[in-house]
Length: 121
Image (cartoon, rainbow, N blue to C red; front, side, top):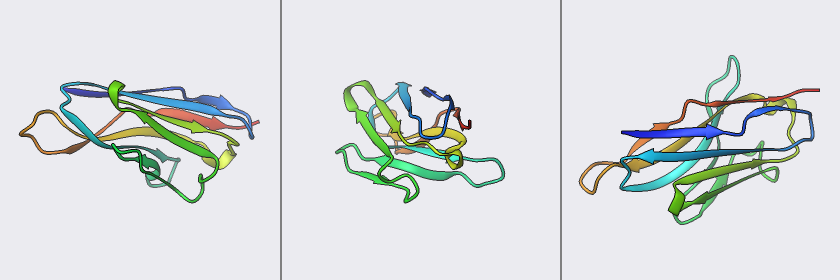
C-alpha cells in the first residue's frame, strides 16, 4: 500500500510564497518521475512541474521562473517552492509519483489527496 501525503498549502497574498511538500510512503521499491499538478474550479487538472529520478525538471510555461521543484530520493519527498504567487495560481495542488512496489511490478501513477492553495488579498 502506497500513500502520498501533501502539506504546505494555505492562503497567501499576491506576490507571496508557499512551499508544498509531498512524502511517499508504504510499499515502495523505486520511484521514477514525481510531480505536481493543479486543478482550479471548472478547469482540467494540469501539470505544474515534474522531476525525474535523475533531477531533470520541466515546468508549465505559466510558472516557469516562479516555481521550483526539487526532490530528495532518499526520503521519497518532492517539494514545490512557489514564489511570486498570483490569483491565477489558486487551485488544489496534487502530488504525483510514478513508482513500483516491487522489483517485479510495473510502474504506476499514484496521487495525493491534494492541498488547497489560495492567492488573494
